[in-house]
Figure 1 (cartoon, rainbow, N blue to C red):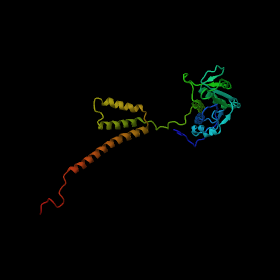
Figure 2: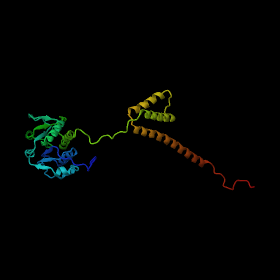
Figure 3: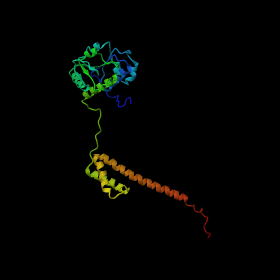
Figure 4: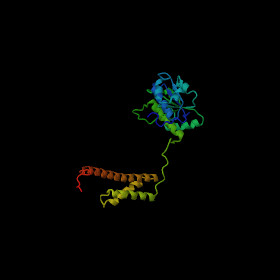
Length: 285
């Protein structure tokens, strides 16, 4: 859902490689690309000769809050001018161009980009038109090619999707693969004596509830139950919770039985004939 996981108190990521969109045809794709950039910490967008002009209201709608990327986007008449101050440029394409130019996957480009930025270079990731991609002449203006292992029978990616995949790989490389959060620290592992006490509690109540219907199978059933909990690698908190569950089931059953007995007693009382009123039916003295 939109905004899910967003923390507006966190600082907005700045920097990263320049993303260049060459003659994008739809404002919706420009906005979606800006959203993907914001998701993965990229902020510098350059747009070359967009078909529907600029600014574009549809891009505002589809950026889903990444307005600052659109606000700071720079407009250029052609790719040459957009690359004029860039140290290293990578062209994204799904087609083999027959050029003596390095071809890399997105993860390799991401690692190289991180190293180049750290060394003070400026890197651009260049994406082509939705329908035709980059022209061969435009690819020749770049230093390397980025391609993805897509289905050759259906290789054309949506523009924003291509930006998202590439930006994700950059974000992963820049962060060292660290995830934004991890599982909270667990309670200490349950001690063996506490685990045995839980087994005693559970098995006692199961026997009381007539769970073990076959005396011959009770030992094997008991072993199976114990092995289930052994595989769970229970913590102290887990055991405390399980003790509470068993107790609640027992007390709940007893409570139901008590309430049932009370209802039966009230129903029986209603069925009994009423006694004679006070002062009636007795013998006179």
